[in-house]
Length: 308
Image (tube, rainbow, N blue to C red; front, top):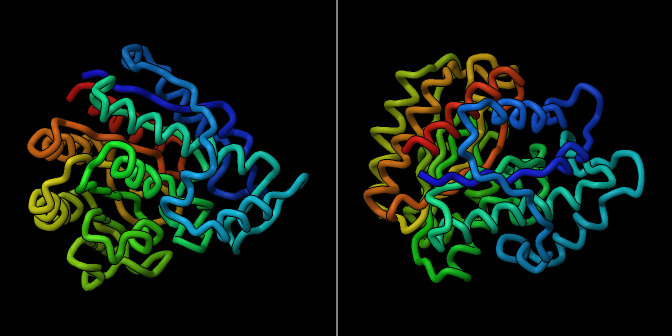
């Protein structure tokens, strides 16, 4: 398999308050983990800033303008109770989306079999008109629309295994049958959405987990709900919102997954991609706040992307 990695040191320049879990060390931990010799065959690219017009794939222009204007010239500015902007945040957002679009292009043109984007801030909590949950704009949603608009795809799937529900992605595609969104997540937990009855127009699949659930419950939810509905949707392309905060070490939740679980679900999603879309998969980093847990789980995920 040819796997591309897209990242950039600029992602350490998005600053958050002292003690905030979504911190620059997250990117450093991922970069260090992926410098191990077993990842020597990763084809590595530095992200480039995208033009802002693509943000309108997922967000109205008024909101985009407001987010840009909220970025301070110095210090920190609050976008909501736990979402912060610093002077390089907008550049980081443009790099994150730019890397995501480059990854989509590489996979859909056959340059790569799959790809992983290691960027921050994350995106899956960003709704159409709301920045929240550490997220400014929704990178995965913009990537999905890019795949449709620039590559002519009709059915794109986004599968989110972050421990927090991807409310932003659900919000953006809730009434759009051309994009399938599936999420496993702890419930109850922030942001409070993601109940089984939230099904959109039949394109939304939520498989909530209870506090203290572990590998068995996670794999059952994936097999019995998410993977079945993904097969029924028959996507032409799969995007993975890869949050690693369901790891047993993570401080923000109470799901007890191990590195092997992230290897397993990556393999299952790759199997689905092989059945439906010539193995076309792009994954991007969402959550994961214990640095050791993040490094181990992300390593397992990327190693499976490389190994097939």
